[in-house]
Amino acid sequence: MPPRTKKGVMKKIILLFAALSILVLYPFTDGSAASAEKPAAKKKAAPKPAAHTVFDLSHAEIFSPVANGELDYTSFHDMIKAAGVTTAVNTETITPKRLSGVKTYVIAGPAMGFTEQEGAALRNFVKNGGNLLVLTHIAPPVAPITNMFGILISNFVVAEQNNTIEGRSQDFLVTKFSGHPVTSGLEKIAVYGTWGLMAEPGKETKNAAVVAATSEKAWADLNRNRALNEDEPVQEFGIIAVSGLGKGKVVVVADDAPFANKFLGQADNRKLAENIIGWLK
Image (cartoon, rainbow, N blue to C red; front, side):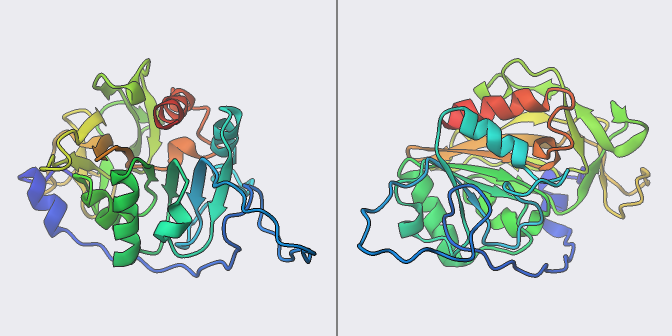
């Protein structure tokens, strides 16, 4: 990922991604698989309070917080519930009404982009005190959302020369952390094919900052051949960034793998999840 200048590669390299088909689910389920049938109500029930933490399932997410595959986020979802908060999943268009009463909204691995109206709803949600957690599997769908909060996400994969896992350059341990509640007590986190982050603080996002980064020997694997070529920039890249707007908080992680069932127990990935849950609670 390292550009000749950081902004250069971040903004000039474009990769195309195939859209995935969208699963048809029901809105705001109780945090378990959505039911296809609803019992007929004899009388109108009082509206249920909004869940504290809601996972988005309306943008062709590749993995799920309510499925049990090794790359799904079930264990992370269970950790959130164990922290004593209510959870749900949203399977409809994001609107101010659907975000009303929600404290933390989780966007994890979408394959489809967000509309301008959804972006505006999320921006106002954070500005008014809501929290947003973005876990990245494919960069382009979430880049416009993270940009609103002063966090730029690359559209190329990062590889490392240091701390690789089993010699694989795109799988490595992140060991460089800045002082922040999200990174408190971390010594290393394991990532498995990550993008890169940059923080560009703005007038309303002055606290945007990278809090976890690669070594200075990481590189932008522009051709994805997992080998360092002469024209590929070598530099440090952000892996976790935090920001905020108004009263709300934002956390962006450049790789969703640390939160997958298969990898949550690797390195200090579980501690990272605990820290994020605690900071956004």
